[in-house]
Length: 207
Image (cartoon, rainbow, N blue to C red; front, top):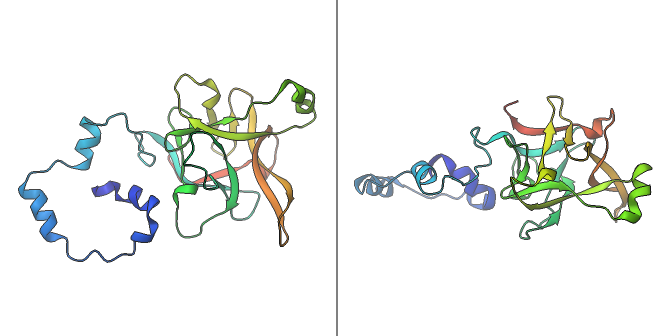
């Protein structure tokens, strides 16, 4: 996979430290057969494939860390085998990026986890009154669609992430107490305000 091998290791970080031995024979074999590169495959066979760390496609990528709560990251909470799931907050995996905490902000203004994009969870009509009193909405992931206006977000240079359809901002709120102490946290969309809990940062940014 050449320069794309890091994407493989996102899914199998346990293999990154594995000693593969001498690969010269296999590399020479590939050269003798005049095999095409993985870049050629992406450009000619699968050009629609989204590459989550490619500046051609993205404006930022990596762990998405909250600035107001120490070492807390956006996480799939091991639900990313589903087409639809809610995002959550989990302690950041230090010194390593795992697939559950790898996100990107695309040039199409999508907050993505591979082929799934973030949207603000829909609320029922009975909850409309609560919305006026600070009700917050969960962040739902579903298959990306260019025709879904609810999948568009604005990432500011300071790190605020605003949902363009609802004008709500990503935030962290406490949702209860964890077993063993400490607060349980969740990622939600609420009214935008001056708060460090509404500031986020990616590991890599081209903004």
